[in-house]
Length: 337
Image (cartoon, rainbow, N blue to C red; front, top):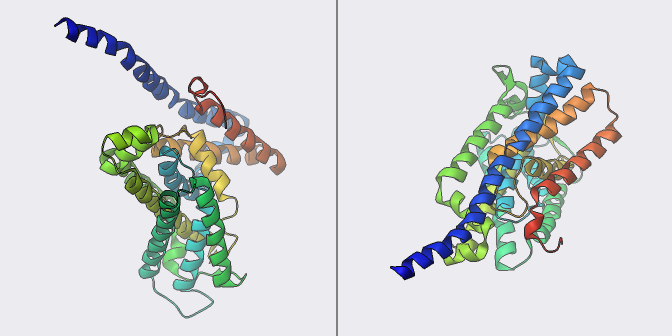
């Protein structure tokens, strides 16, 4: 009996810090929501047009692609990895879609099968990322940096430097046609968010992604196949990047090799600003939604306030530095590398 009491007393201090850390994280996860509310209030005071329904439509239009891309990146960052192939996956998907659907360059008109083909290509793109990262033991940022350029290079090879106009009314309707005042693409992005939320919270894959991000060694000891989880997560991210490519092609009405330019910065910024930790294991797709809204609302607000574009870029840079600094627990890091 005495031995049991000693063991229990010894275990108590060990359980304390993780619980305290979890409580601190839950409190910190609400900080981006507070930032979003304060940001909206300040912009509304300076320019009341910010609260108009027309401006809400513009925000939804601007947020739908970063949200879908951010969802895919969130699953990777939750594992403690990084995916730089966002622009490559989106560009390749948009270009393939423009060539398979009704367009101004050839006689193809595969309709829904073109969309399914693009999603399969996105899954294959992500699967290759996972295979290179896991089986060839290449760091995720280097593996995905390479596939980023491969994706853009393939898109260039398919088009030969040209742009292909999309004439398919179904694809164009994602950006043009509206439901309850908002484009169908925005509703599709919310549907992607709902699917990702279900995967994250109600599936074994979601739990395993958190476990791998929380500590790969502990995940292995728990019987989790880290190799399989990483490959599936990268494959899933590739599908979301392909969805982003579909929305980008619908929004611009064409496919070209420059369609993904600048998407990586916005994606990573939104995920980090939303509160998902770069170290892995903490965060969620709902926080990514908040991060996307912060980035888009800030950009929209600066336009309404007449802030020069050069200053806007500087503000976004400061925002991501601040978000990363606040998301890192420096007590657990002896060196920053």
